Image (tube, rainbow, N blue to C red; front, top):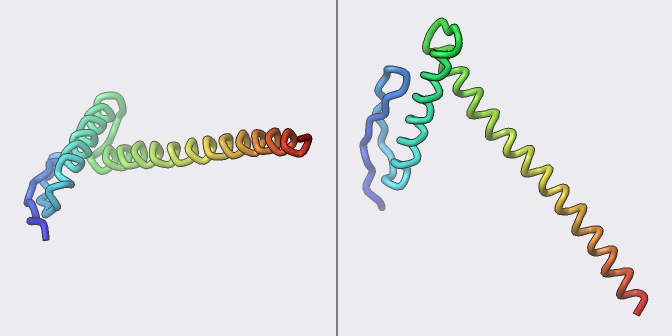
Length: 98
């Protein structure tokens, strides 16, 4: 069993102590950094009342990116399936004429 790692991440002026697998550290630190950068951007560009509003906007931004990627992937899959069926039809028509 891998040894757990204790780290502290700072998000929106709060420190969050976490116990994690060492393999998660880089991803969590990058995620916290991305949240901090986006929060600063929102605070600079928009009239925000408090940190909760900023964090809600960050959550919405990140969640919408994930959802959009899922939508895009589904559209890509649909297009690939359509093209494969067209190719299959061409191959079948050529084989049936032999």
